[in-house]
Amino acid sequence: MRVKTAGTALSVIALMVTTERRVIGDQPTWPRTAVLQFRVLASWTGGETNEIGTFQSGPLGEGGSMSASMQVGTSPAEDGSACRSAVTMSPFQKTAEGPLPLWQVEGKVQQAGMDDIRVEYAWKRQFAANVGSASEAAYRGTTRVTEGGRVLLDFVPAFEVSSGCWRNLALELSASIPEDPSFGARRIAYDLWLDSQGHGDRLTRRLQLIGKQGEKVAFDYGTFRSKLPVAPPPGKDSYVMEMTVTGSVRGRIQPDGSIEILFTANRGAHPSDGAWFRGAYGAKKVRAAPGETLRLELPAPNQVDDHDNEPATFKALAEQHVALILTPTIVE
Image 1 (cartoon, rainbow, N blue to C red):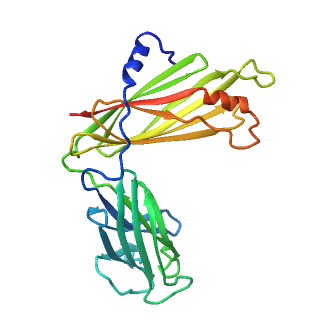
Image 2 (image 1 turned 45 degrees about the vertical axis):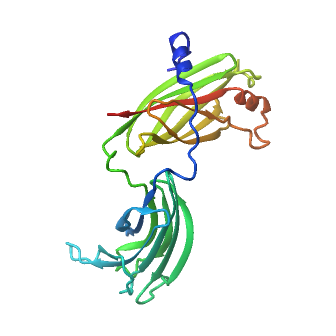
Image 3 (image 1 turned 60 degrees about the vertical axis):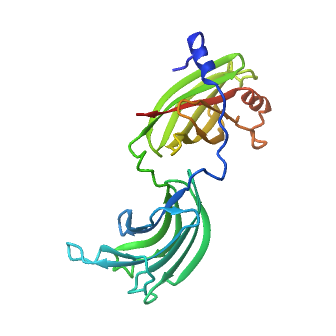
């Protein structure tokens, strides 16, 4: 529902817009840790891709490292076929056994931040006997992993050497931030307002969200429609623009009682006839006290090529200021 603010609604917004907190620096006030996961995936013949084995490290501080061996094999299934996976994992170096790959993996945490985990990694693929197109290989690199993100490291065909069980095998890397058990059962509430002002009009919408410690909570404000002060297309009385705002918020209670927050949003715009779509992205990582209010100004979509050919439209969009106003609190 479109809401034009007036009276009480205006005063609520005015009270909510307070001071912004500082952006979190690179040096936290307490040690950060991350957990690394090396995972073997298998695409079953005529079926889906599934995880068949994972080696997970314990919490690693920045500079901490781990290594493991992951030997892929098969074992008899209940139907008598050799299509049951058997991934043998060990923190020690092993010698490859059989025609299926052995992956030697190493991982080192360079930086452990909210949705920003930097990992140095290495892997080596070995076989007891090379079959078909499979061969030994190795690689060393670095990557940035978001929480819940995945990085594909290696891929090998496996139909012949798996007795026809799998089309292919793959190795991937992911990482996560371990939660402090002291706050594992806590919830964070997010009172989130959208405030759009421009061309003599003001619109607001409010969402009230709640998430677990460390949980990424998505939001979607739906569609806003507004008339822009530009010449309408032929056969139209006015130029109607449709705007969308989506994003997410992730929060963690810290040992000092503050809340670390990663706040991201996407602002999209397109004319009501759907002739084109442009978007813009905003993000803020802050540490705030419970009950403190934060404001994220969203950039306006920009004209990106000559085919738009509507400079007046993008100027009008830039004059339409859109902000998200967030107040986090801890649910007892």
